[in-house]
Amino acid sequence: MHGLHFAADGRCTEIPSMPKPYRVPDKLRLQSCQAVEKYGMVWVCLADEPRHPMPNWDAAVGGAARPIFLPNDVWKAAASRHVENFNDLAHFPWVHAGTFGGDKAVAIPRHEVERTDFGLRFVVDYVEGANRYQDGFEGAEREVRYTYELTYPFATLLIMEPEGSAARYFIGDVVCPESAHVSRIFQVLSDTAGMPDRDFWVKDQALVNEEDRPMVEEQRPEDLPLDLSAEIHIPADRVSLEYRRGLIERFGLGAPMAA
Ligand SMILES: [Fe+2]
Image (cartoon, rainbow, N blue to C red; front, side, top):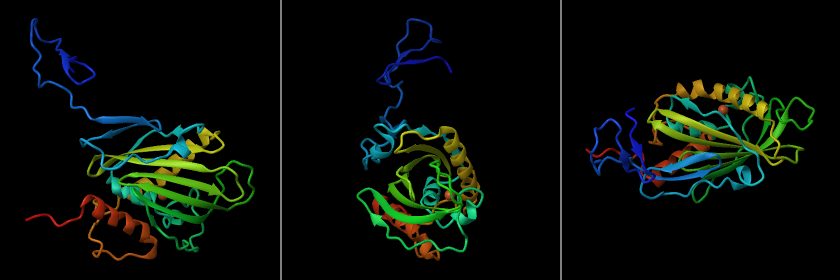
């Protein structure tokens, strides 16, 4: 607000409000951190060195793909709450009844959750209640194979393969915590055909997000419970449990506070 000038290394070079001559204090500098521009986003590491590599979304978003960047959004929820919801299927028929949610009476197929070097991976076939893939498919329902590739702590790539389609669709989802209970959501969409219908997908994903957001914002406690014995879990919580286990084991979270 006072028009200070800074050099690329963060040093302050000019203080216009100061009568000349003046000396800029050495300590007056911007805090800088490592940053990489990739997949249309700036990824910043606040620690001296990253603990994990960045997620690899080259196949989905890099190369010939023409990604669509959704306007980023702020959710009043913990980043981990958003991640759990993004990796959950059992809420589809209930929360996404207005978009792609399927039959409420159909159980979610059992699926293995694989632990990868930096996250989790699982594959599930799901029958969506409406076809949203614009490839000429005729039918009210459509089976879609979902592959989720989660990179700890907050990045997920969802790969969607609709039955009978040669194209694969991708949604990359990354959460940047703004505070413990406020999260900025970044999403990027693409498909293997390289011709996503921008208007359709932006609108569709916005509708889906608006179905999720109020439900996630209402979840209590606001912090993800990391005492795994404190809650009752059903089979649909398998991914959540693995995710929470990973947060505990990889980051030392959930340990009792020292007295
Ligand atoms: Fe959802």
